[in-house]
Structures are given as C-alpha cells and as structure tokens.
Image (tube, rainbow, N blue to C red):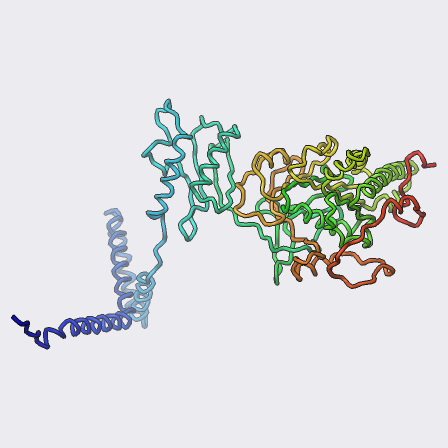
Amino acid sequence: MARRPLPRVLSSGSASITRSREIARTAADNATDVLHPLITVVRGLRLLAVSGRQKWAATPKERRGPKLFLAAACVLVVALVPYGPILALVTVMGAAAWKGRERTPVKTGPDEAETSRLRALYEGLVPYFSVPEDPSPLFAHGGDWEAAFTGHAFDEAGRITRLEISYPAYFPDGEAAARSRIEQLLHAKSGRDREYRFHWDEEAGRLVMTVLDALPATVVAQRFVTAPGETVLGFTDPDAVDRTVPVRDGDGTVDASPVVWRTGGRSTEPHLLAVGQPGGGTTTLLRSIALQALQHGDVLLVDGSGTGEYGALAGRSGVLAVESGLGGALATLEWAAHETERRLITANRARQSGHPVPDDVRRPLWILLDRPSALGHLAASDDRPDPQELLRIPLRHGRAAQVTVVLAEQFDALDGLTETVRTHTRARAVLGPATAEQIAAVLGAGPSTTPPPAFPPGRGYARLGTGPVLRVQVPATPDPYDDDTSDADRQAVLDLLPARPAAEETAPEGPATEPVPVAVEAVVGEARPSEPLAKAQPAGAES
C-alpha cells in the first residue's frame, strides 16, 4: 500500500515552531534589556524590605516603640521639607538600584575538582602522618582533610599554588629522610612540571608548600648597581634577599633581587667554588665575574679545559694573563703566590711605619681558574707540581692581600680538589642538573626547593658561608667570539670588555678563529719594572 504524503501544514510545522521560539526568545531578550533598570530597582526594593524585616525582627520589643516613633518623626520632617518627598523617593530608588545590582559571586571555598585534589593529597599523606597508637589521628583514611589543611590556594587552572599542612607532633620533622619523603609525595601529587618550596615550622608543626615562579633567564651581562667589593653572582627570588637592583630585561628595566657576594678585607667568604655539569654555566659565571672584577681590579685567567672560552679577554686592560697551557698556568700561579706575599709584606711595613697602604696593594687581584683538575692530571703525568698547590698562599692569605680566588670544576672531578681549596672556598655555587645529595655535598646543606623542570645555562643554587641555600640564575654572559651567540648577547658582552692598548687594536671586535693567549712564562722571564707582572718577586728578595 503506497504511503500518502503528509499535509503541508504538518510537514512544515516543526520549522514554524522553531521560528516562533526564536522570535519569542528575541522578544524576551529585548524586553529584559529594556526593563533591566526596573528589574534591578525591584530586586533592590525586595532586598531592602527583607533586610528591614530582619532588623525589625531582631529588635527587642521594648525598643520597637522608640524606633517606630523615630521613623514617624523622620517621615513627618521629610513631608514638611520642600521637595522632601521627591528627594526621599530618589534616595530610596538609588539605594534600591545599588542594592539590586548584579555582583560577581565571591568564591568562598574550593570547587569539586579542587576538593578532589585536596582529598587525594590528604589520603596520600595518611601513611606518613599517622600511627596506630594515636587515639584521635589528624590523618586517617576517610578523615576530615579540612582540619589538616589549614590553608590552600589554587590558580586559574585549578592547580595548587600554596598549601599549609598541620601535621601531628610525633612526626620526626627533624630527620632529613622523613622530610624528604613528604616533599617527594607532595611534589608528585601536585605536578612535577613546577618548582616547589617547602618551609617546615617545627615549633608550630606546620609545613607550607609554595609554587615558585621560574627565575628569569633573559637578563644579560651589564653594569650592575653595586659598590666596590660587591659581585653579583646572579638573581634569586624576591623574598629571599632584602635588596633589589635595576637591570635591563629586554627592552625595559625591572627591579631584580641579586645574590651579592662581598669580597675584600672584611669578607667572611673571600673565595668561591662553582661546581656543575658540562653546559651548566660555570664558565658563564666565571666570565660574568671577570667582567665585573675588571671595573676595579686586575684579573688572571687560567683555562684548564683549553677550549678558548676566555679568548675575548686576552690583551684587555686589566687582564694580566689568559693561560690555557700547563707551563703558562704554573708560571702565572707562581707569580700570583709571590704577588700575594709581596702585598702582605708591603701592607705590613706601611702599617708599621704609619703610612697608608700603597694603591697597588689595595687594588683587587682576581685569580680565576677553570677546570684545575685537567691541569692537575697533566702536571702529574709530566712530574710537575699541581697548580692547586700554588694556590695555597692566595687562598690562605688572599683576604688580607686583596686577592680573590674563584675556581670552577665539574662534578666528576671533585675528588681532584685539594683540601686547601675545599677549606677556604666558603662561597659555593652549584649550576646545572644535580641531585639533592650532590648539592648538599657541595653547599653543605640541601636546597629547600624541588629541582626545576628545565635547567637553562646558569641556573642552580648558591650559598655564601653558612647562609641559606638560594636559587640563582646567572646573567647570560656568552663567549662573544662564539658563532652560536646571538648578536644582542654578543654586543652586550663586548660593551663591557675593557679596551685593548692602542698598539694591539689591529682589528675590529668580532668572532676570532683562534685567540692568542698571553705568554706568561716569557713575561716572567723577561720582566721589566714597568710591566704588571714585574711585581713577581720571591718574598726573600725584599730588602
């Protein structure tokens, strides 16, 4: 049996209904827009009426009569004042419009997703913060997480940015292993792609976990606002130090929190040791220190790796030598030891005679040694003294002689450092990827933060003496003669380099194929009184 076609009215009925609904919805929206002020005033009048009814109900019965008499008196006064009723009506309408305005609801607690995150953290901490003997445990499976988490904050994505935990008094928070287990759990449960800081308050029994922002890696080498004897190792968190300096970051200027290392006669950490992995940024740190030291002093550079990373400094004013060979390094460090002795003797004689210390003794001398273990292996195979042995006098007496020693070494060669170097380098820095055990072995204390998800060159930790372990980001100071260096970074470093003597300026600044180091052995062998290294005389030669 053939189907009969539907009537036209029934076949097009759905389209007509849909069109009618759209027209009705549009009319309702337009009416809402037109009547929005009236709706706001009506809502405000309702809220004012509800508020007035609540206040009237909360008023004691013995006070209702005086209040009613006062209200009647106010109404009579308004009625008798010219334009009083109109002004009263305008005032009531204005109050109603203000009371009935649409306000963004204030978030008073975590939503469902955030509650699930907090409960998951609570359940994960139960095995660590509870014991079977506790009659009323703060942490229990299915317990109240709100009592344990006294404070929390989330970002726009619903991830935890701050968490304050109250833990029981019997938890061994003085043991590093127990604290490390809690930190690892919170790090894993809160997300491994961020960096966290943990602050343990043993007296109050509270642990505060905070998500840290990444340290800016866009600050390049520049002149920092520092006093003589102050060196900026890098930049850290704003709440870690009580000082800021203006720095250029891109096209603008910002206030950054520096890690300032103070050297000189009154410094408690006169020498520095930087340790890192290959590519971690120790060479960048030495280059940054050299550029800052050249403002007020002289620099001796010994490159044990022999890669020519410091070729741009060779022949500059204030740079006494840049050595990479074993012979030149030994001659340079031997001169530095004699120069330290000469400075001590000269300063002592000046003080005994009541005269001021000469300027050449007060001028700082910096000895920068990169990869001393590589030179030590060469010296041992050639039956020659270890270059580190020649640093004994500058390390022990350098503070009084205005001599500062900075060494950079890699983790795989730490065993080659002598006891003198380990003892007298009280300022430490660890750059690049490293475990908590490695950081604690170098700095003497572990970091209070988790490892960052990415390690740009120059990123790590620093500790000055017995101070706290600080996050640090060394300002970008690449080799200007490296072809991979960007033009902006190359120009920033070249602007800080001292000028070469007029006789040696034979070519414009730019990448060099093979930097030529200064031959220190020849200078020491044929030293003239006018040359800087002519001060290298044995202590017994003083008359």
